[in-house]
Image 1 (cartoon, helix red, strand yellow):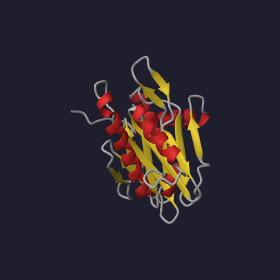
Image 2 (cartoon, one colour):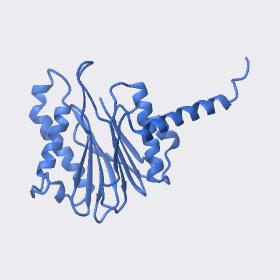
Image 3 (cartoon, rainbow, N blue to C red):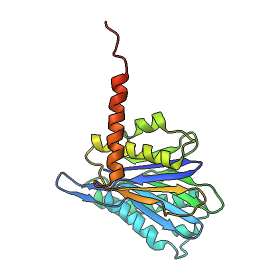
Image 4 (cartoon, rainbow, N blue to C red):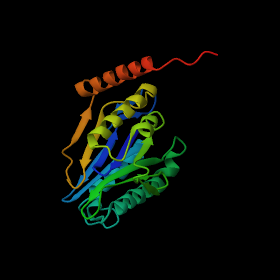
Length: 241
């Protein structure tokens, strides 16, 4: 299992993934779930969840096709982020069709992706690609999309995320969403990879990884826990029967 989150704001995008791959209690590894494809005024970020062999086949094939001129799968030729999401969905269908009958006796071949970024001439956009290869797009009314282990990290986003947030504010909420997920589900784990993409920057310079020894990550968790306990302590008790 994994957890990936994308947030779309007027200021840009916050795209985040964990690094845990779990094939059993004694088969735990760290695998990067974020792939960056850049070229000129083009930043495309792919976050992946699901069968690791499937996601790696999709991402590696698309990465190797980038810049080759293959109109079907070259992300450098996609005129819009919508077309980039279509390429990811089409490649996913191709891999599932190729491998599905061999994998299904042993497990689920399915995978899902978040595809976010910006291509020159349009605003930043964010899509969720389902296992069937079809996809939906985030909007100002539904500004975040999740894949993987989503339920534990969703409540704080529903409660606190607003469209006028800065990227830094959304990044703090994102990390708290991951903290809540990791506290409740061992199949999500560090390091956490995060890109805060500023609209029209066409830069991936604001990328950071948080691991167990990261001072900011540890301070954020500690201060949030202390603050939450303080708020609960101040609340009035329930009325007597």
